[in-house]
Amino acid sequence: RRVYLDHNATTPLAPEVARAVWEAMHQAWGNPSSSHPAGRKAKELVGRARESLARMVGGRQEDIVFTSGGTEANNMVIHSSCRHFHESQAGRRDGPGMPHVVTSNVEHDSVRLPLEQLVKEHRAEATFVAVSPRSGQAEVDDVLAAVRPATCLVSLMLANNETGVIMPVAELSQRIRALNQRRAAEGLPRVLVHTDAAQMIGKGRVDVQELGVDYLTIVGHKFYGPRIGALYVRGPGTTTPLYPMLFGGGQERSFRPGTENTPMITGLGQAAELVSRNWKAYEAHMREVRDYLEVRLEASFGKQRIHLNSHFTGSERLCNTSNFSILGPGLQGRKVLSCCKVLLASVGAACHSEKGDRPSSILLRCGIPYDVAQNALRLSVGRDTTRADVDLAVQDLVQAVAQLDQDQA
Image (cartoon, rainbow, N blue to C red):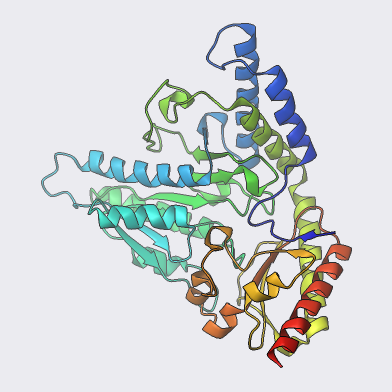
C-alpha cells in the first residue's frame, strides 16, 4: 500500500463532504436564482454553506464571497485594494501616486505573480519583505518599515506551505490599526490587511476577530473539501473595499457573478462544519504523528544526517508539517522520492514540482544552505495518518537512501 504524506498539496474529500456534494448534485440541481422549489432548495444550501464558513472563521455570513479557489480570492484582494486606492485618491493633485503593496518574499505564487505583473505594467509598486533566517517569519517591524504613504495593502500568509512557519498576522494587524489612525489624521490612504489562510484552516485556530484582518483567503481542498474557495471580507463594499474582476448575472451580490456551483459550495460548507467541530482534535492528532515522524527520522538516519528545515527559533509551525533534508551527496529530494516505493510526498510546493533539481526558493530565502535545501523533502501528515503509516514511510526512505548510497559507491 502507499502512504500519502502530501496533505499541504491537497487533501482527500472527507466522506461527509463527498456525501454532501453527491446529495446536492442529485437533489439541489436547480439554479439558485430561480424562484421555483428546485431553485429555492439550491439557494438554501448555498446560504447554509455561507453560514458554515462564516462560523468557521468567526465572521458574519454577509462577509463570505464564494470563489473558484485561493488564486482567484488572492487576485481579487490585490485588484480591489489597488482600485480602491485609485478611486480614493482621484481628484487629489497632491495624491501619493501609484498604489504600493507590501508582502513577504515567501508568499504563494497567487500573491507574488499578480503583484509582479502589476509592477511590470507600471500599475502598482510592491515590496517583498525578506523573512528572518532566525525565525523564518516576516518580522512585524520589517513589514511596517516597508510601508510608504502610497501603501494600500499588506498581505501576509498565515502559515507557510513549505516550512509550516506561522506568521505574526494578529500582531501586524494590531500595529497597522494604530498606524491607520495616524495616517487618517495626515490624509493618507488606509492600509488594508490580507492573510492567505489556505494552510492554517483545519490545522489550528483561525478567527478573523483575533487576527484583525480585512481579508482572509479560504481554500477548500486544503481542509478535506472540494476544489473551490471563498474570500472573507470585513463588510464587503462598505467597511472594506471589494471590486469584481468579472461582470455578469449579479450572483454573490455582483462581487463574483456566475451561476453558483451548488454541489461544491455545499461540500465546502460541510468541510467547514467538520473543522468548526473538530479542529482541536485534528490539530492534536496531527502534531503527535508529525512529532513521531521526526523522532523516527532521527532514530533511523542518525541526528547528524537529518537537518530539520522547519525548526526556527521562537516560531510556531503548522501541526502537520515537517520539512527536512537527509544530508549527503546524490540525495536530492526528487531522487530520493523517485526511489520510494510506498511514500507519496513532495520536495516543496506542488505548483513548483516541475523545476528540476533546483532547490526551493522559499527554503533559500529562509536561510537554508543551497546543498541542504537541494535535499529537502516536505512531509505533511493528515487527519487519518497513523504511527504505522509513519513507520512504513520512514522504512521506505531508508531503503531509498541505501539504494542511492549504493549507486554512488
